[in-house]
Amino acid sequence: MVSAALVTLGLLALSLGANGAQKVVTSHPNFVPLKVASPEASISLTLALPSSNMDGLHAALMDVSDPKSSKYGKHLSKAEVESFVAPKPESVKVITDWLSKNNIKANVISPSGDMLRVNIPVKTANALLAANYTEFMDKRTDKTIVRTLSYSLPADVEEHVNFVYPTTQFIGALVPTKPPFEVVQPPKAISRKRTTPPDLCSQEIFPECLQDLYNIPSAPATNPGNTLGVTAYLSEFATEDDLNVFFEAFRPDVPTTPTFDIVSIDSGITTGNGTLEASLDIQYTTGIATGVPTTFYSDGNPFVDGFIDMANDLLDMDELPLVLSTSYGFDEIVFQSDPEIANTLCNAYAQLGARGTSVFFCSGDNGVYSFGFNSDCTSTEFGPTFPSGCPFLTSVGGTEGIPEDAAVQGYLTQLGSTNAGLFNTSGRGFPDVSAQSVNFITRIAGVFELVLGTSASTPTFASVVALLNDQRLNAGLPPLGFINPLLYSEGASALNDITVGSNPGCGAQGFPALPGWDPATGLGTPDFNKLLNLVMSVAGAK
Image (cartoon, rainbow, N blue to C red):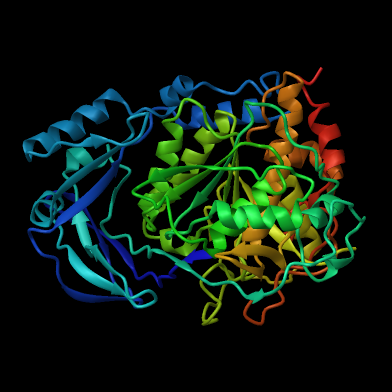
């Protein structure tokens, strides 16, 4: 699992300045001011413009994702999505004129034109935004960032801008949390003859364990239009050498080790030694979604604008991956000072879903205490994760051991007063689903290690959906796309309901698993055969 440094947000104030409403933040104890940023240093600013009809996009997404809708599976084209998201011409003119008056030329960085980026000297940014850009050190990472404690926009401009980044947002870079691992030797019992279930699965997980546990087929996918994407940040990398040895050990039934494509975003690395997160993700997507063409998207920017760039680069493609798996995230609280950044990212995932991509994010490894609590349990409230909490993607939790609205409200009724005051009862419930997440044996830079976390369960569930897509595509049906409406309306019976355990963190018991949806395991773990029957029987499958 990978996380972002937690920020204790200070007070947010709005005061009327010469340029309009001035945004001011104070007190960021995890960020230490160092010195005023050099006036000649370059800074890259991202400006997000309001979309012309985001509500329309949300409605269209639900239409194509709800199995009861006559439009189910009729995903939108790239142009149709962009028509919803594009800013109003008035906004484009106002922003362009404002920048031009300051001798600044912006680059469009989103296919719909709702995001612009300018690269300018700090002194120009200070004058443009009435800001005072300063270097701050993030105490959790020792990384230096450039931010301002206040800024403002001209009164006639501010209504045409959702956010400017970076300004007052103290959102730290992603930080690897180094999940527990153990160096092991691959079991010698694995052979071309399968055992059901494998005797070793109670101690460690490998592809055959998951295939037997969740009825996942070992036969390769066959549809050439089927695709699966894996994202990576923080110079994480997976190698063909590690994958080849992994397949020799755990997929001897596959005669040729699959390859995977590599796409660089924000100067992401394309060569190097294998690392933990990327190796886990690639080995358990290619190792479970047998034969599904897989692409590794390597992003070199560990900050939130790296996530924005990843989404925009994907949306700019004519052909999207049909499934996208991400094992990285932030603490939701760091977006408190500027929720529009979070909303913009969630809306980007809505665009992917509307075009037919199933988007999966890990829900975190620290139970009810988000990403940032594995060393200092100082919070008095539970901490949700982001983007896992976005309403337009599928959040994946983790389970251990071998043996939405209505759903969430039903759980709250069963829960009663347990954990009262520690969480938002009106927010989005997550995770949506779960899968095994403990002791995944993974080949990393020449060594086999056992790895745990929702970084393991997320590519597992994503791979199940990739194989379901293969069956649908071969039957002439569209891919599943955003699957939550299907799962919450008809899919519960196709999942294994987990009713034992909880998601503890920092000494708190967390939420107990109960019948039906719960915030420990979501709706449950996959059963491929039952899910296949479901996805081949829903509207449009005749």
